[in-house]
Amino acid sequence: MIPHLPPRRVLFGLVMTVCLDVVVQLLWKHAAVGLPTHAPIQAVIAAALTHPLSYAIAGLFVVQLLNWLRVLEQADLSYVQPITALSYIGVIALSAWLLGEPVTARKGWSIALILGGVWLIGLGPASTRAAEP
Image 1 (spheres, rainbow, N blue to C red):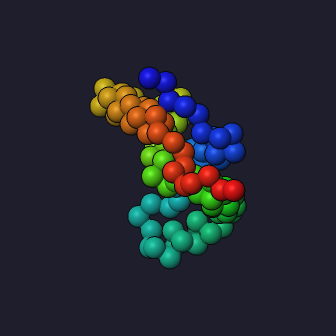
Image 2 (image 1 turned 45 degrees about the vertical axis):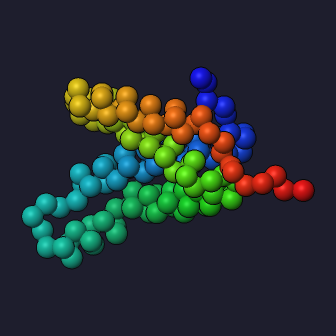
């Protein structure tokens, strides 16, 4: 059985949600590498607040919030939230490609389980609300 696609606006919002989450996670990793190690927490906070990526990440969080609110207006939370697990796959793939992190068999099985779960969720309707007049 092939899952039916949600309305285009919901689909676009979900794609944006997943992409934004992957980008934010990768930027966080990049910013974290530049933070001082074995330093007092005040030094780490000061370094994070002066790092330019901190502001880019904060801006992306605002965009992500606004996008997510729009998605939730149009679809059931029980439908869209599990689909955001696709961001885990994006993080694994791009971390392997850009950061050289290994993709183990366990991660491969995890990807398969996520894809299976998202496929099963996609079999249902995006919204169970009664059609509005």
